[in-house]
Image 1: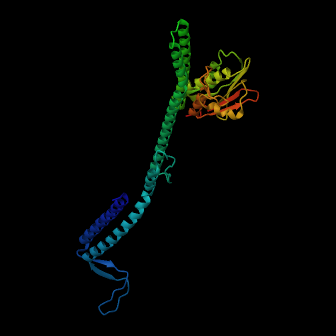
Image 2 (image 1 turned 180 degrees about the horizontal axis):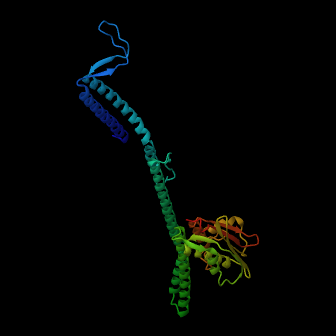
Image 3 (image 1 turned 60 degrees about the vertical axis):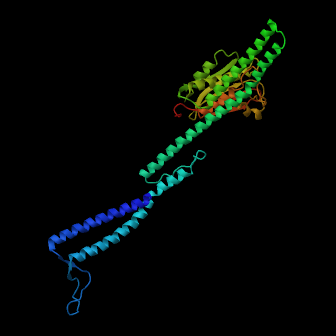
Length: 368
C-alpha cells in the first residue's frame, strides 16, 4: 500500500471516528433529556388523521432508534465523501515528493545537472526539495573534483612515461657504449657526467610533473595573498632590466601555488628573453578582480601557436622540448593554478617578439 492510500484511509478513519463519537454523544444526551421519544421540526407538511395536511412547519415525534439509523446512514455517506476528498488531497500533497523521486531516478554519475523544482510557498516540501538540490550540488562538485584528480593522475603517468624515456635511453646508451670496451678513467668520468646530466633532467621533469599534478588537483587551504608582494620576491636577482608597477592585488588562494605561479611567469620571461632584453611587470585590481601582467622581449612567436604553449613539453612552434633549458611545464603549471583559483589566463604574442601574459583572479573579498 502506497503513501497516498494510507493517507486516504487515515483521513477517512478520522472522519468516521469523529462522526461516530459525535453521534454517540448526541444520542446519549437525547436519551437523558427525552427518553425514547423526541420532538423535531420537519421542513415539509405531514398528513393528519383525516388526510388533510396541517400547516407547516409541524411538530412530529420520532423514536431515538430512527435517529440513530438515519445518523448512521449520513455518517456512511460522509465517510465515503471524506475518503474521496482524502484521495484527491493526498495526491496533491504528495505530488512534489513524486517529482523528487522521478528526478532522482533520472540522475546518474554521468548526468547530475538536473535539479528538483522548488515549489511555493516555502513549506516543508519546498525545504526538502532545496535540501536535495544542495546535496546534488555537493555530489556534482565531488564528481568533478574526482574527475579532475583522475585526469591529473592520467596525464602525470602519460607524460612521465613519455618524458623519462629519453634520459633513461641516454643513460643506458652511455653505459653500454662505455662498457663495450675496457674503459679508462676518462671514459668512466665522461659516462658519469652523461648519466648525471640525464638524472638531473629526469629530476627536473618529475618535479615539474608533480607540481602540475598538484596544481590540477585544486587549491588547498586558502589564505589572503597579495600578488604584488609575491611577484616582488620573485623578481629578486633578475639579471635583466625590469619595469615594475606593483600595486596591491589581494586574492584568496593557496600561497604555495600562487608563489609557484609568479615564479614560473618570471622565470619564463627571463629564460625566453633576448640578450639585453627587458621584463615588464604590473599588478593591481579592477572590476572586483586582481591581475598580474608580465611581458618580455623574447623571440617572435606566431599568434596561432600561442595557445599550444599551455600544453606540457611543447614549444611555441609546436615541437616538443627536449633540452636542458627547462622542463617545458612552466605555462602548463600556471594554467592549472589559475584554473584551480577560478581565474583567467590570457597569453598574447607581441609583434616585436616575446609574450604578454595576464592572470586575472577573483579579489580577496570575493573568493569564498
